[in-house]
Image 1: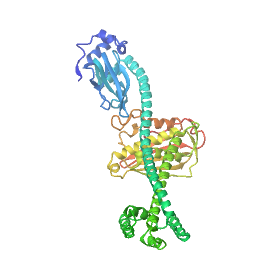
Image 2 (image 1 turned 180 degrees about the vertical axis):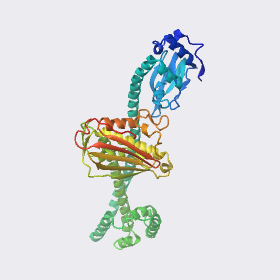
Image 3 (image 1 turned 30 degrees about the vertical axis):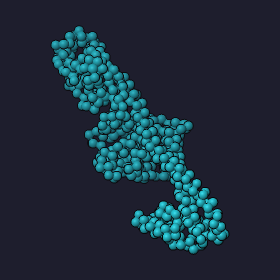
Image 4 (image 1 turned 90 degrees about the horizontal axis):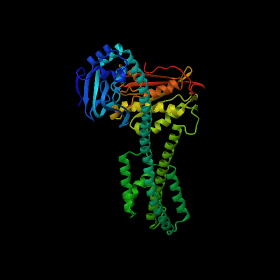
Length: 491
């Protein structure tokens, strides 16, 4: 634990002058610093301040070493180390945010502590200290922001990869299971086909069987619309019918025959055309063939879903395309929804698209980062409410044409953004999420992409149950090729 004490008794003027931050101060100024500073002693491993805690002090290292880290994507990320003469804590005091990182001693350390009020007086009374701090501040913010942007991209990529792996695993597993069962059905069908050939069916009987299969494949009388009770009753009737005629595995075959739309009446018609003991073989062959068809459909659906996801990923990244090209804004939004399917599956996504919108020239892959950030934030907001937990979450995506611009609005029915912070949501490092859940860079990155690279505009309106992020992008060529322009953030 840190221990505070008055610095006046333990720090001499010469010691202060030896610290680079105070090297340019006059004796009177050094005396003022000596009289206002407190001393903090911390052991190795102790925390000086924690990420997310209210920022209340600025620190200068007298002896020892302090390491600065930040939690990003659930992992502690190293940012910097401050040894003798180094200082920390100035960024949140100057920006009015909580501590954006954690400071922890890596060795027994002794530091000067300046409370928030004293820190502001220090800047006013000692211009050389202010100059040094602001000079270092610019470099530090650039280093921290670059590190965090890279980590944010990696964290976002990790989240997308994990979600995509989950989405790919479901159809892959379903297709694998269906293929295994299909192999078994094909073997049974082969054996039953040979057995069927031994019964010497007449051409008329074979034609009747072919017509029945054709009706089933055409969907005549399918059971897709049956309620569970009616389906159960029909399975019981067919099971009894098969039992009475000594058909093997009657109760295993009944569900498949019901799914195909067969009824007792249609089976009676089939039995009326078949003589002798051929009925048992025909019914089992028919059920096996129908089951194989169902499994084939499952394999087709699974592989189709895999191809759809892979295609969405390729389009999402705009692989092998120029950075700026003419795009349909809806394609990128839809690809993003597919990629985020794992996170949106319990949320109703309502589309209100103006399909008559013209194509725009833009950096497609970068705009997809914007849609990802906005949809991901909307989903997080919804899941933090009863609407998310009870399946009442809703995201509405609306596109429209405005004079010289295209509007994309992403709205959610989450709790809303507090009025006192709405103007700050696009500031670097500012986040309303808990420690480790957000870097405070997602909306800042989105703002830079929309405004800085596309000459567009990002605007947000929010009240409880209705938060709307509105992205406006220029129409026509040139708007997406890095055109400059202003833009509102959170006004």
